[in-house]
Amino acid sequence: MNDLTQLIGLAPVKARIAQVTALLAVDSARRDLGLAGTPPGLHMSFTGNPGTGKTTVALEMAGILHRLGYSRKGHLVSVTRDDLVGQYIGHTAPKTREVLKRAMGGVLFIDEAYYLYRPENERDYGQEAIEILLQVMENQREDLVVILAGYKDRMDRFFESNPGLSSRIAHHIDFPDYSGEELSRIADLMLDRMGYTFDEGARVAFGRYIERRATQPHFANARSVRNALDRARLRHASRVFPKLAGADRDLLVTLRAEDILASRVFDDDSAGGPDA
Amino acid sequence: MRITQGAFSFLPDLTDEQIRAQVDYCLDKGWAVSLEHTDDIHPRNTYWEMFGQPMFDLKDAAGAMAELAACRATFPARYIRVNAFDASRGWEAVRLSFIVNRPKDEPGLRLRRTEAEGRVQRYSIEPYATTMPEGRRYQ
Image (cartoon, rainbow over all chains, first blue to last red):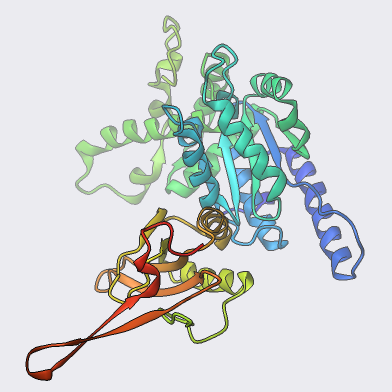
């Protein structure tokens, strides 16, 4: 796994997390000297568009909290509404408790947390899950750190309608979108891990691909980059397959411009379907 | 008479801190912890009532301790034990089991002697408490 500093971009996020880390380190040093003080609140909210690294940073955060002694086991339990909210009366509380039990000693990561609250349906069981969550966030602070994540605007509305939740979250961290240049570097890193490289043409083509893809709907930052690379690998494989006998290393690892340019993103008449 | 069943039963009652440490040990070994309770303490009564489901996927003892607190609140005057089940192939059995809660007053077990054919003595034991109906045995 990466260290946080190895993540590309995300400068404001890294700055915030460095602040939090410093605070925690100072706090535990103070406690070692017996200086009184309430332990700092650790619950966080990560807001940002899809694919901006919220889950990755949450994983890192779990590791950091573990190393600083604020989380006994340092594992991350990632859940969504479906894991917390039941389907009928009396189903929600045991389900939520079950998840909370599993997350004890680590970090509970609730993705798309705003789905827990459905204002249009006053009988929605999500409210029950929120109440149990609040109770545990308040009473078992040393056992569990909760990170809520989701789109910025919807999380803001979610917190507005649940002020109790918002006030128990000490750190609101906003994840910015990646710039084109950062996405290219992310692509290089991903390719490196997959064991492929771009040739010059492909690099230029991929830069153009990102530019065009970013203007289309359902653009998901790093996740779109990963998907694009996966599809480029598919095209590369079908290009190489007929010549597989006697293929050299170069042929097997190099993605060329044509592998990128065949994407539907470059069709001008395309309506820009999701991750074409 | 103090009931001695499972591990640690000849020691003084474990404190919550000690229970937590034992549970942590079990979880580190990858065993699934579960809680059971009973008010029939006969040694042949192997299967006690389950309290909730076995806690698979648990990483930290805090979850089990919360469950234990709930169980004690529900059944303060019953025997409660922690079981640690090892699901790995070849074992598939309870590896550790110990009592974590017992009634204040433990009347113990009665020894019954029965005269059988030809002055043969048959022995059996019976918890005094089980003369009362279930649920009213320990107050």
